[in-house]
Length: 150
Image (cartoon, rainbow, N blue to C red; front, top):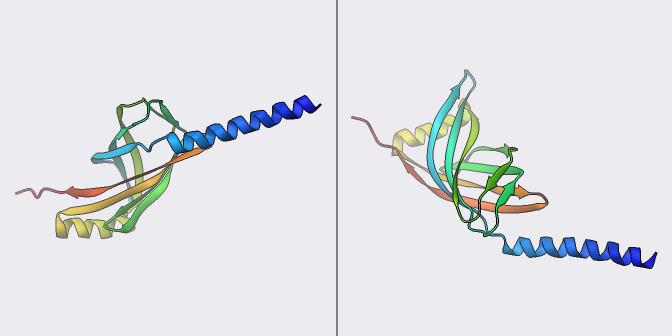
């Protein structure tokens, strides 16, 4: 009986220490905004497809079961949500990921006014990628310039 408890304790200790080791060793993926396109328009909302080049800087593949995100445009919350599709990022490589984001018109109006006025918009995307019980945060911000057509 005593051996069984020692084995159980050893198994729990191994799992906990492995998770602690990985938490300190797994680096966050980097994101580079590529483009945004309109995928669907209804009377209530618009669905966009945001394309990001995601680079995994780690020597191991990262497989995510869930991505939670918050997207701010000009410091205002534009949308937030959860993406529940399994994603695998190969080690030390870049992959283009497309995130579908549905936005209601009322939330879109402030951003459209900013775009029309400034011909640019600041974005701030942050969130976390869940890999089993491990959660890796990410953050990307920048500015998108819009060209005026003649």
